[in-house]
Length: 160
Image 1 (cartoon, one colour):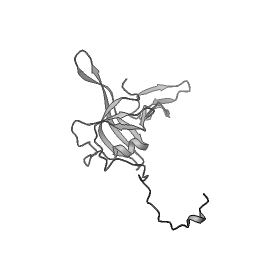
Image 2 (cartoon, one colour):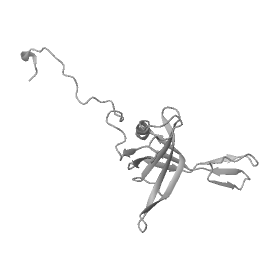
Image 3 (cartoon, one colour):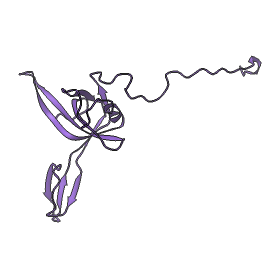
């Protein structure tokens, strides 16, 4: 499977959730060495972006529907330690409609219906295309140099 640290992915859609995270549609492709063609190895429309990854994708130009304006998608790289995959299980009553996003269903020994989901989260990415300019790339708000203070001191009062 293509989901891993260091993988290159294309970003297709961005939907901001709450100002702290976004749900995005991404694909990861793998190159066939014999034919030199790429085949999709991973595709998901519900990947959560948080932290610095979220701050970076907020800068990608999208239309009013959240679709990335670049028709070929925008390529990023998942940073080392920058992704997570969880498989939570949620209990549902027998006969209740199953969510379409569940990847698996089973009935446990207590006759409870269990849905299994795939939750993918990306925390850190690298801009490999240079899509983010220096003007709109996220910063840590630390000034590059502190302003000099004009202090009037008497050299005789200095401790050295």
